[in-house]
Length: 254
Image (tube, rainbow, N blue to C red; front, top):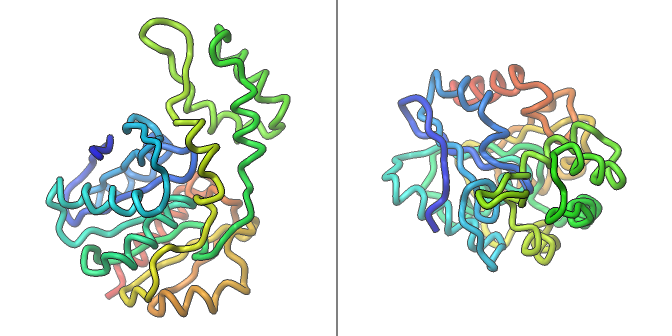
C-alpha cells in the first residue's frame, strides 16, 4: 500500500508513526524540530489521514506497510519512532525485520494486550450525524455529548474533512477501526527479541506503561531504556520541546 507521507530535512532517515485516529498532521511541530538533525518521514498509516482505506487492519499489515515504505523510498538504516498504535506497529516491525532499522523509539505503549480503551471514542464519532452536519461546530457539539475533554475532541476532529461534492466525511476508516479495535489493543504478534538500542518514553500521568511492565519490556527489548515525562498519553503534544530533546539525547548517544 502506498502511504501518504510528509518529508522534512536531510541525513539519516527517521520514520514517525502516529497513534490510533491520529495522522501525520499531529506530528508537524515535532517533525520540523527533528528535521534539523534527521531526514524525517511522517507517515499516515492505512485507514488514517490521507492514506488509502482497507478492510484489512491489523499489525501484520501495518508491519508490512512499514517494510514496503522503507523499500519504496530506499531508506537505509532508518530510525523508527511510533506513538501508541504506531509504537506497537513499530515494535512488531522491529521483531519481524530487525536488520531493517537502526534504532527504535516507542512512545507510551507497552508490548502487551490492553483492554479496549477507545470504544467510547469510536461510539462518540459514530454518533456524529456526518451526513447532515453543516459546520465543524455542529460536529463538536454532537461529540461533546460523549466526550467532555475539549482537547481530545479537537484532536479527533482533525479527522473531519469537507468532501469535494459538499458536506463532511471522516478521513479515518471509522467502520474498519471499529471492527478491529480489539486487535489493535492486542499483544505483539511476532516472537523473539530486538537487541538494538531502543527508547521507551512514557507519560507519568498515563497508565499505558506501568512500572510492572519493565521486566516484560526488558525481556523483548534487552537494550532498552525508559524515560518518563510529566504528561499524559499524548507525550509529544503535551511537552513537545522536552520530548524532542529526550529523543535527540537518545539518538546522540554512542
